[in-house]
Image (cartoon, rainbow, N blue to C red; front, top):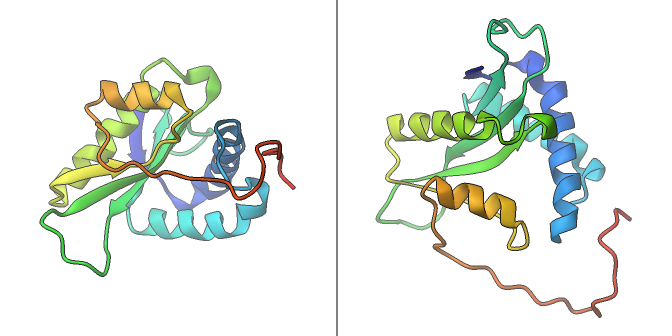
Length: 166
């Protein structure tokens, strides 16, 4: 397996992967509607590809984009209105095909993104993970990520509403 920068010819596949990722996150109480966000995420991923903020994992010998990636990671440098005492990189999305999970693809993608962010001068790297997604939390803890900020949420509706796409 190799990790390479994504190219625009990867875009359709990466959008499909993001939709799969978002759909899967609904089981962990994500509020994102997967298919309804196809157009805005397409634009976002295209911008990140152009800026060098998306890497894909490909099978050995497939560095020329002839088959679908095994997974992707999207990352960037945080910019905001407020001055901070660190330059923060952010992992925005990490997706690995279900049949390739547990085979090191996610680790390789995360490691490559971290290396690129370090090369770009970041002091710290952050990411969001849904509290109910214990597998993802365990994966990131194994790679040195610790809780820094905890977001709390309270529904204004009763607890019987469904997370199905509406």
